[in-house]
Image (cartoon, rainbow, N blue to C red; front, side, top):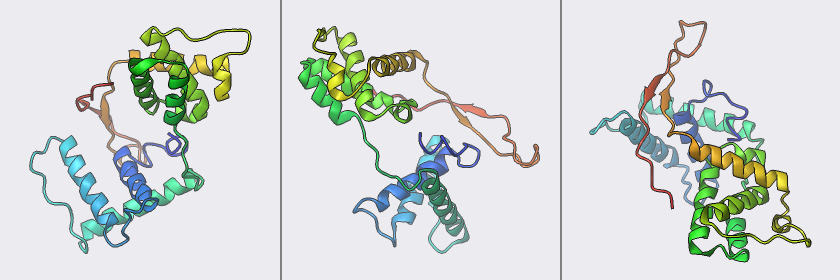
Length: 220
């Protein structure tokens, strides 16, 4: 979300951005190997792209040293640099999941309510909410909506609202809950393949072709 707030889909298509950001994430982990990480990332995304097109037996990925591999690696590195500039070299992300578990335990949501809250915290990542609210506000909104869906009453009293313990406000909690409800009510997304036609106004995107989304995973 932070990346596409500053970089257009035309400048960095999702598949290219996903590969570059995965490559960047590997550098923050012990799994990074300068000699093979770019080759492994390109091979994995070559397979994913073929699967998205419905190709059962895709051709092998380009081998290191070939022109195709060097061109793909140059695009990978160039997009990684674009991502670093767009993110301001700030690569730390605070997720709400830990706070969600703590608040669910504090408010005694039970196993079913906690599982719903965890699933809603994951659903937050499919919306712009993580760039609109800090993690404590996301956690409070998620727990509030999970309690409503699970039918668990939340404490109210003159001593102050429970979300104040997390550092959230009533407005923030309401916005997160309403945004999640709206997101859950929308139909499944349709993937669009955007093809750049250089003959259409110097790089304007050609008409997008809808592509059916992959089967959705079951939500806890």
